[in-house]
Image 1 (tube, helix red, strand yellow):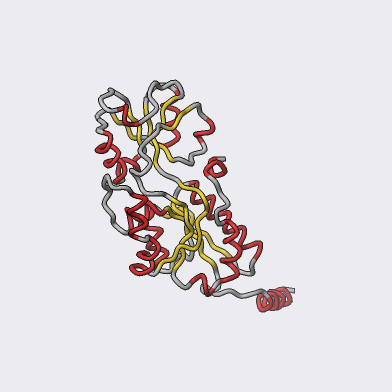
Image 2 (cartoon, rainbow, N blue to C red):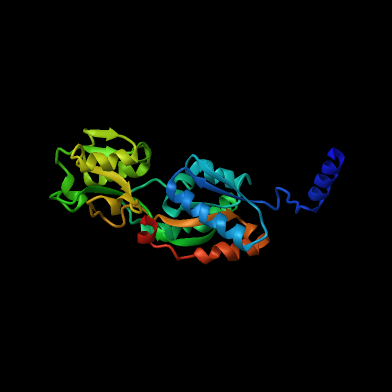
Amino acid sequence: ALCGTFFLLVVLLFHLPSFSNKDRIMIGAKNNPECQILAEIMTQMVERDTSYPVRNMLCLEGTYVAFHALVSKSIDLYVDYTGTLLLTILGEIPSKRTFSDLQKKLAIEEQLSEQFGISIVFPFGFRNAYVLLAREDFPQNHIRNLAGMPLRYGFDAEFIARKESQLLKDHYRLSFQDCRLMDTALLYLSLQSSALDVISANHTDGDILRYPVKILEGDPDLFPAYSAVCLARKGWEVEHPEVVATIGKLQNKISVEKMRE
């Protein structure tokens, strides 16, 4: 009986489809819910509509790690944001210049291709960026009016370490003297309990729908456009047209409102 079972297993193994690492699609994601959700959507689409097996790496620590995992062929696809790529990968130093014009001049996609051999496969259709939130009853509506006010700010650790926070502080002449660092979920709770006056957030946060908050208005061209895009190595799309055709159905299909939901 044991020999028969062993023989049956051998037969089954020979008849199972075999896939090399070259055939497997590796989809990565930065360690945040939004990127992980988009990576999971792409994973399910590829598994459902193509013959390729998929493996995920959904906890990559930030843009630098995820981007270089793509360059080194550890992953095949991942989601990032054009503004983040501009500042973090291409090394543009923030200034008070109009970033929309700057982005056109730099031609981010061409620079990524020339310097790193990376292509933007498609945009998802929404933009994300850091914003400042306050409670609905907060008396001010624009960030410029916060200058000189003794406010209690709350930021997450990533935001305070990024170039955008310094640009925001300098541009609006804000004082972050009373500033507390905490997890994003605690930021929203602290704002609602009046322990904080203003917090950092992402434009697509689902908690914006959950809590009575308002997004403080700001100068629209202060930061670059953070369009969510799918990235791959240059030429990878040509080698995997079936995969690209499948996930390409997401192109310009996801709005800010849908991402929040």
